[in-house]
Each structure stands twice: as structure tokens, then as C-alpha cells.
Amino acid sequence: MRRRIAAVVALVVGAATLVFGVVNAVTEFPRGLIFLACVVIAVVAACYGVLRRGIARTAGLYVAGLALVGALLVIVLGGDFGRDLLLIVGLLVTLAATRVSFTSRVDLPSAPAPQHPVLFYNPKSGGGKAERFAVAKEARDRGIEPIELKRGDDLETLVRGAVARGADGLAMAGGDGSQAVVAAVAAELSLPYACVPAGTRNHFALDLGVDRDDVVGALDAFVNGGERLVDLAEVNGRVFVNNVSLGVYAEAVQRTGYRAAKIRTLLDTVPDALGAGGSDLDMRWAGPEGQEHRGGAAVLVSNNRYRLGRAVGSGTRPRIDDGLLGITVMGAPADEGQRRLQRPMREWTTPSFQVDADRPLPAGVDGEALIFDAPLRFQIRPGVLRVRIAPQHPGASPSAMLPEGLRDGLAALVRIALGRDRHSASSTPGRP
Image (cartoon, rainbow, N blue to C red; front, side, top):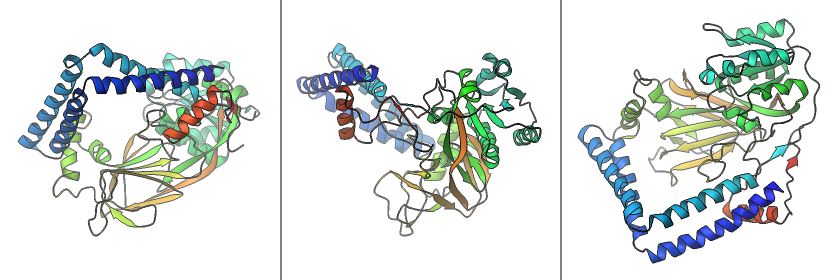
């Protein structure tokens, strides 16, 4: 019923907001065009400045700032601000109701609780979440042995040592980089694994269907949780659970002074990589049809495909059990003849991928800055990780039920509102 009500709200408020927006644009013409012109000028000037140094950069960014101020003044002073505010509220309500409409929950097959589960936790991760939520005590109360990761400890050594002592279930409370280490051992030994969202962003937990706001409740995965099989990915033999980023950001984080001045370091990296004569990011890779390309501002290789550039569900993965890597190339790569690709962002899926270069390549692996010898060979490992999830948690990604296009989305909202949705609020996972 909650999803049906949300779908009705999304359809009604969305339609009203659309009509109101059209009427507002017509009655206040050409205010909208002036606003759009300011935004375009800001984007063009910002791109010009970022790709250059010295006075040219300062001038470009200064013009971009003035254009944004102009756009803001057009909104605040150029017309009825109350109407604009009402339009924004309508859009926000529509998006929120749409998100609720496509909320998914999976009833996972029950699995026997491990006899000697172990929780590894990083007390510093996520601003001290593990200590703040007393995960060590909560784990003991559930019969789970807690092991603290201390400075200088090698996490993989701790995990393998625990398994040698009889651990038959492995959980990690920490960031995604630590999750990957524990998950890799669990997959190798076919042991159940639980993800406790005690890191900063907990992207892996979100896409697994773990409630990121319920750190303690995630421990119930080893009490009465259900089990699902998900994929892992690897690059040159190193397992990752989320993604590997190559390009501008990966180059920037390797530079001295990045942590002290992140924005300035990023700005200094872009001209080297993408400006006139810039060749530091000379990466070579094959497109979806096998054609060879080089360059690109950034290459993102992910453990299953991400939804990017969407109003709802952007930055999440609908599934982590499709058995395919997600590839996203951003920027304007060129082939050997220096012909630009037509699209500034290109996405596809593949079971394997390779990036070559004439030098070692910096990479961000689940947020950790590393350097790999070229070529970088990526591959997916389908269904190798036995994930346990607490019964009170969704068990599915927040974007698991989201349609791909606007037309499909509207049709799905109508079906939900009429109670004719083919997907029930509770469903079973794609892989048992």
C-alpha cells in the first residue's frame, strides 16, 4: 500500500509540476532563456579555465563564477521567486515519491548460522563508527568473535589466521577496501560473509541491500540471516568489490600535497592530462565492438554496472550478480586516427577488460590509491561470494526495480498505482 500511495503522489505531483513549469516558462519568457544562457556560459568558461594554467585559468573560472551569480540573480530578482520555489518543491516531492514507489525488498533463502563466526573491525573507519555503535560488544552478545584491526596489522593475515583456528563465517566492519580483503578470502574458501556498514560511504553494503543506517542490525546476518550469491571483480589478481578508477582523479591522488590541497591538486592535474599537448593519460583500451582507442579523462571499471546520470538511483548498481563488469569511459577518447568518439561518456558491460599503457598506471581501487604495472587486466568472478544479510534489511539494491527509461518508468508507476505491478514488494533474488 505504501508503494501504491507513493506512485499516485509521484504521478499527480509530477504532472502538476510539469504543467506549472510550462505555464511559468511561457508567462515569464525570456527569463528562462537568460538563465539557460548564464548556465551555458558558466560551463564553457569553467571548462576553459580548468584546462589551462595561470591567468587563463583565473580568467575562465572568474567568468564562470560571474555567470553563476547572474543565473542566481535571474532566479531571485528576475521574477516571482515564490513560483520558482514551488516548482523546485514539486520536483523534489516527485523524485522522493518515485524513489519510494520503486523500493524493493528480497526474501532471501534461510541459511544455517555459522558455529564460529568472526567479525573484523576497524575502530577508526567511518569516523569511529565501530566504537560508537559498540560493535565488538554487540558481536559478542550474538556469539560472534570480534577481532580489532590495529595499526600495522595485515588484515588478510588476521583473516587467514582466524580461519586456521576454526572460523566458519567472516564479517567485516569497515570501509570498502577492507570489505574487499575479507570478501576475497571468504570467496576463496567458500565461507559465508557479512558486510557491516561501519565505513564512510559503504557503497558495497548499499548495493548488497544492507541498511547502512543499521550498523548493529547487520550483525544479525550471522544469527538468522538469509544468503545470496554475488560477484567479485579483480584487477591483476587483486579483488575489488566496487570499482577501479583510472585517469584524472587516480593521477591526482598520487601527487604530493593532494591531501592538504585536494582541489588545487586536481586542477593542476587536469591540464597535464587533457590540455593542449597533455599526454600523461595515454591509456589504450578496446571499446564494446573491439575497436582500439586511447586516452580519456577517466575510465571506471566496476563490479557490475552502475546507474549513472539518472535522476533516481544514480551511483548505485541494480544488481551485483549479473556476471559482467561495468565499463564507463568519460571524456573524449580518440582512436589511432585521432577521431573523437561522438559521445563524451560511453558505457557498456563485458566479462573482461584490459587497459594498456607505456608506463605504470595510478588507480583508485575501492577508494585506495595504488599503482599497477601495465597492462591492467580486469575480470569478473560470477557468484563466488556467499553473502549473508540480516532478515530485517532490504536484501536488494535501492535501484533493483528502477526502470531504465522515462517511458518505462511512467508505465511502471501507473501499474504500481493501479496495483498491477508485476514485481511484488517482496521477491526472490536472481541467484539462489
